Length: 396
Ligand code: DHB
Image 1 (cartoon, helix red, strand yellow):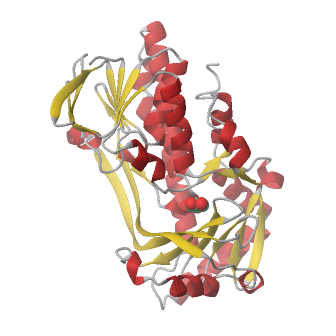
Image 2 (tube, rainbow, N blue to C red; image 1 turned 90 degrees about the vertical axis):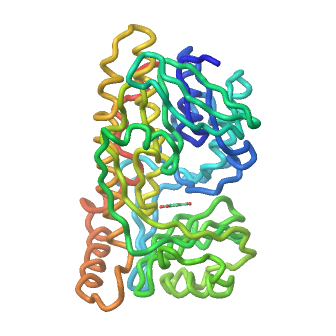
Image 3 (cartoon, protein in one colour; image 1 turned 180 degrees about the vertical axis):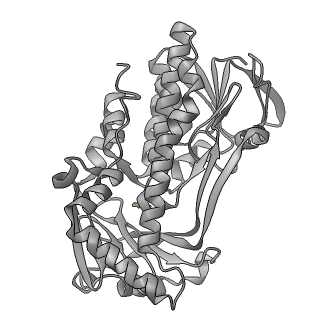
């Protein structure tokens, strides 16, 4: 098999890259270990920045999102038994949308297949070779048989545990931080407690009240990092959610059937650079953020916008300036998102009982963000997404 850009991984990054390349007349093949059904059902985060809403609409994959996404103009912070509104629209004149990652994945898979795109599901990429030359290859197995894709470039969009980052490990530097807690996430058939997301700080730990529709909620509770979700009974989850929520909202908390429960560990991770030879890393293969600022998928999509533009420049002009600058260009945004995700995380979580100084400091920070327009604007600017510097807009 031969293509221009070989893509490892059919998550949001790999699929969006393939879609953007197709719009620019560049061929790609995606290799994905899992089945289509698995990719489409994988429950992940669900918040997209304003520019992602625009990207989906303007590249022809926004029809269902327009109808089904929930558009939010702000969030609420819950602490000291009361709710505080942060009004993004007023502060920075933009908002965010709640639209599950797997919905974006479904829309992109459908569009790629409709446009004749090649996605090899249930195909395990085994080895990436030749990236220091001009003809890299991806070796894979399909139905027990070994095959290779020859390409001009490889995009490693295969997540934190994929094979792409280890393929260039010798040139990489790693930066990371682990947090002493995880998130227990649930999906439940219940009416949302509020029309906006609530980020709750409480002595008992952080809680987040999000949603997927008018009838499905996505809630999270701070827990131990390696806790088994099965040890959390449904009753315990609902009572803990209630206990961590400010009084005025607690009364509105509706319980319902819990349909999904899982625990995610929290970490910050960046590798530098995000490229070597003809292999380019994008999304979780290069960086992980703690979920508190909902930046993971947005960053992955930002990476592939920058990367697709660089490929476009290469194929149109044979110039490699954007390809050479890919990592540096992405890392500026990534580090700002790392900073914001770390900041939200440290402000909202309990780092162990008994540290009263930290608790007072966190409450002062929440009070400051809720009462100062300058502080709230900084939160709003980062939460709704820093400017994309025209990375995808300029070309059309
Ligand atoms: C969701 C997840 C997040 O990490 C967040 O900050 C906001 C919303 C969600 O899954 O809905």
